[in-house]
Structure formats: C-alpha cells, structure tokens
Image 1 (cartoon, rainbow, N blue to C red):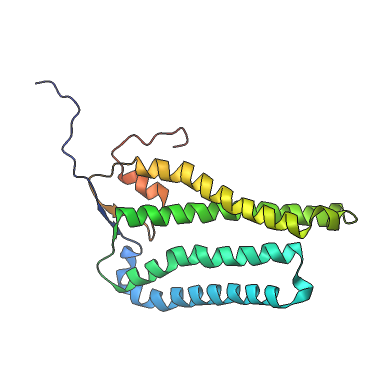
Image 2 (cartoon, rainbow, N blue to C red):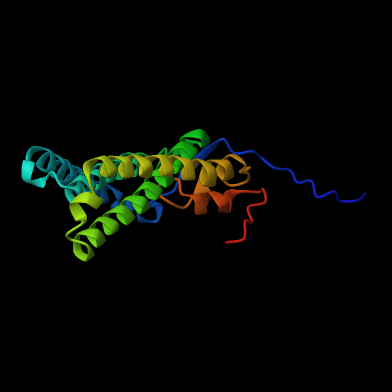
Length: 201
C-alpha cells in the first residue's frame, strides 16, 4: 500500500517547561537568587518612575521616555520571572498551550515596544545634541505623548501580525517538553510538526 505521508500524531495541549531541569539539585538555591534579582529590578524601576513623576525638574522628554522604559521593564520581567520562580519550587511545570501562546505574545509585544522606545530615546538625544537650539520646539510634550502612544500601538500590531498568526498556525505534536524556562518562539518551533519554514530558519 502506498504511503500517503500520514503519521500517527498526538496533538499537544499541555507543555512542560524544563527550565533549569539539568540543575535539579541547585533549584532550591537558585530560587532566592532569582527572586532577589526580580525584586531589585522591580523596586528599582518603581523608584525611577516615582522619582521622575515627583521631581518637577525631571519633567523633560528624556526622563519621560526613561519612565516609560522603567514601566516596560516591570512588565517585561513580570511576564517571565514569577512563572519561572514558581517552577523552580515545584515538580509539575506544566503550562497550557493557550497560556504559553499568551506569554509568548506579551513577550514579543513588549520586546517590540522596547525596540521602538529605545529608538525614540536615541532620536531624543540626537535632537538634544545635534540641534540644541531647536530641541524645545522639535520635542514638545504633545509630540512625546504621541510618540510613546505610537510605540505601544506598533508593539501590539507587530506582535499580533508576526507572532500570533505564526504561533496559532503551529501544530505541536510528539514530545511536549520545552527546553527553556519560558515560552519562546524558537523552542515552540522545535516542537512543531507543521511547516515552520519562513525563510529565516
């Protein structure tokens, strides 16, 4: 009988994040270390936001963008670190496929936003250094707010188009173990039994 290329596949609905599984004996020691790093990162960024908001002399475009970057870093680390910390303490490291896609989407959206925000911060410094006499007219508060809002919108749109469409079209089968501590695109592509070639592999 002719082989039609049909394989016996088990569709994956739950994934296992292996994380630091090879350091099983050290995970109890890694938890306080990573928890302290997460706590310092979060508190440090909150202090930056409070300082920029409270001090009138820091109400400039540069510090406005810095406050946005600090807020972004809080969201960025909070998307990955709490789940990773919980997984360090438990045996069952399962995550639903929809939860994995949600974490991937938030990660990609915030990463896209960070790239645009760093570009805006560079442009702000370029104007301040290369065109100091026109800086106040070129970078006013109205423009700063529009640029920051635009980066959030572009972050959402690009993450939607590039990541969700690709991730939703994935058919995961076979082993359901992700050799990572969070849901990233590359480990998901390794689990896919559907065609994942898009020219950059």
